[in-house]
Length: 169
Image 1 (cartoon, rainbow, N blue to C red):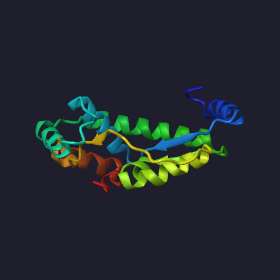
Image 2: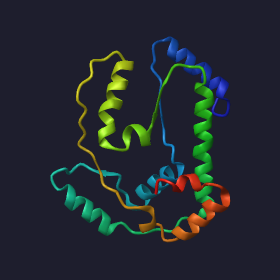
Image 3: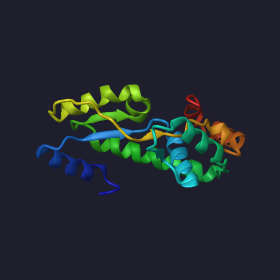
């Protein structure tokens, strides 16, 4: 099933016929998706729950966050994997009812989340209510500040036709 979108679509159809609402969350910028996982791997931190000292937590994280080298072959491999996965999902969901969300348009900024949650509540036939979180995004560092071979990554992207992923940097 993992390589056959038709089989996966059949499973999804069964679930939908039983009342399951399918929500697809996709990240458009696969480069930033890979970087996000690499930052967590290298720092061991994803977010903070300490809202009272947000500025201090951000400062501490940014001061202790080490730059790292990215092997461009591995980077391209991971990006291609995420692209294949995204294409598989798209193909599998073709013609089926589902909610399509992207990280960039629906979740990245806190001001998007209210509208997104209301959309999901409506799809689930639930009464909307305010969503709160105790988590804070802690990394706002631009990639050129923590990728030690940033110029090499940029050159690789230009050579491989991945310039579109650099637009939002």
